[in-house]
Length: 117
Image (tube, rainbow, N blue to C red):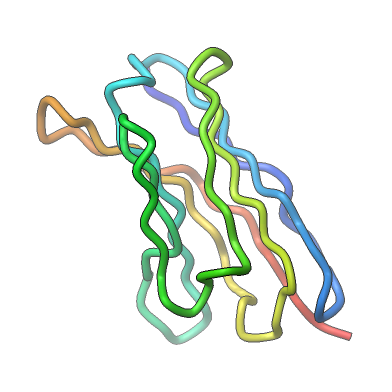
């Protein structure tokens, strides 16, 4: 059974940093594009960043230069390093796994990130 377990969320002051982790299990990790999405109250879920099986990275314009996505194919973890956090980054962050060889997709349960003074 495929599982994605996020961790690392919390409360941080503006300008601070957090690192989110998403530990995967039950899947062939290296064939999945891994992504981070977020959903703020009253808004639709949006892509934050994703990293392909080959390591290509794609970012939302709003986080470019501040966030970095990376993956550890040995330990089957995807990270999101978030720096220079802003109040508008406040949202529930979801990990996503999308297979590169079939239509399968899996979501994590989400982790809350709150940026506030």
